[in-house]
Length: 252
Ligand SMILES: Nc1ncnc2c1ncn2[C@@H]1O[C@H](COP(=O)(O)OP(=O)(O)OP(=O)(O)O)[C@@H](O)[C@H]1O
Image 1 (spheres, rainbow, N blue to C red):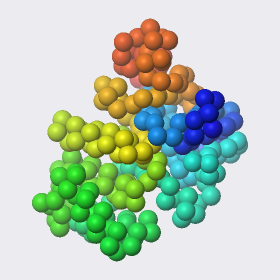
Image 2 (cartoon, rainbow, N blue to C red):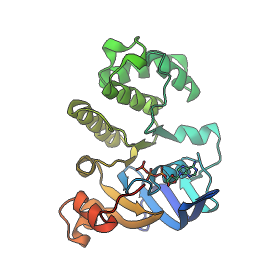
Image 3 (cartoon, rainbow, N blue to C red):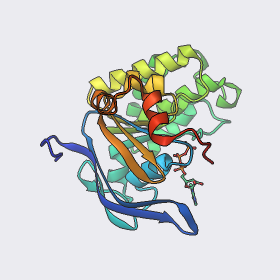
Image 4 (cartoon, rainbow, N blue to C red):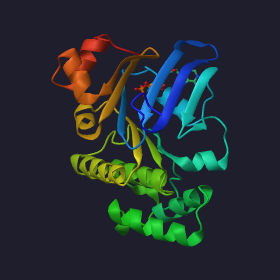
């Protein structure tokens, strides 16, 4: 439960993590609560540790210290039931380029434990919602960047996960695809899916997120409801807040 008594999608307590041989990003005594059903944005400069933190929350990486729970289950248990709780839309395309959307969804649907008919129904629904009906049987390698992003998203939600992680889901897409993806994510959230999202598109984030955290060098530098955070720092936009808190120097 959160301090407010609401159920949690993510509960991180006293978490420590370091990549072996890389001192640059290490988390020490990190604490974070993400309320179930919210739209949560995780922001920070390049190399701040956003992807690393998402990989820790989904159990791809294991924390060295402390605890990370996803819907009350300890992350890192690496079992099929745990993996069914969440979907992950990675920054790098995660599909088979030589396969069509239908073949990719068939593969990832089966991997997520769906039955044949469930895969067929869900594939039809998602291709329709995401405007991929006309190219359903064409190899994905011939698609534009925006179409590939939509395929990537469809794969992440094929099994109707309760928590959806999105690592820069709109990078490199045009306004049409961006708008379609954001409005689909808002619909998903209305039906109860918790969204945990990262992006460098801070204008887009203002439309999507209810709660945010900014991290830098492995530390949470601000956290809370987006309006409360902006008011507390006396800023009008996330971009101003971001520059104010993280500075103007290049990051590698
Ligand atoms: N497998 C790895 N082994 C060692 N260091 C790594 C590994 N993966 C990432 N790092 C380092 O950890 C740091 C954080 O990387 P991460 O990808 O989590 O940052 P990010 O905030 O997602 O950045 P970006 O906005 O550029 O995607 C970087 O310095 C990166 O080089």
